[in-house]
Image (cartoon, rainbow, N blue to C red; front, side, top):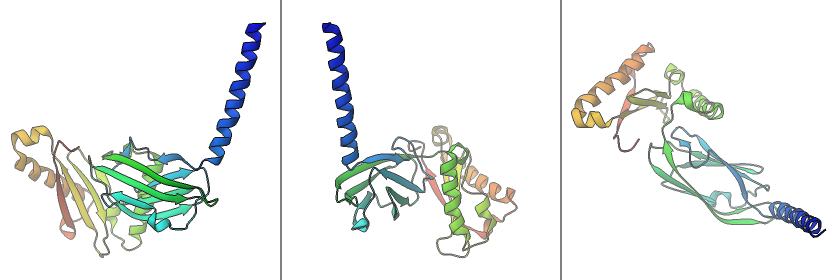
Length: 227
């Protein structure tokens, strides 16, 4: 009999606790999810989506978001979703996006929220379908100002380099090639490796029946300790 009463009391406590937690979750203004999660942020990430449990207010939205270093290029509000558009991320670099005094339409406020992450290079083919589509959609915006076919072949990640392209307001796309050095490259002959990998970039462009000399190519040397 005592055991039966104990079981009943336990079930009642669990039931009341469940009701309390449900009520608390319904009334507390909070972040419910973030995409991508902070433990996996590709360098090709176009935006971060913050999902909330309440409709967001547009009041003071321009002052809500800050970042270290400066990577935010735009903020969009979609009901319970806050979308933060990002500039290019560097492989192995630490970033922090901070939300301050973000308000819900019912007046509830989150005073501070920090989203910190380390960007990592992930080949395009290894990204999720959603991530791939976001990149393609972003590039489609660039394509409106140029008909250059290079956009059909970037971003591209090879073993020794990564290649991206932007318009930067110019009629001819600007290419950025990150040269990925290995520890062996640094120990043996760093300069020779850089020269060879730059040539691989040119060979890739030529393999698409395009002339590398038609583009401005900015090279960035990525040391092995970074990626």
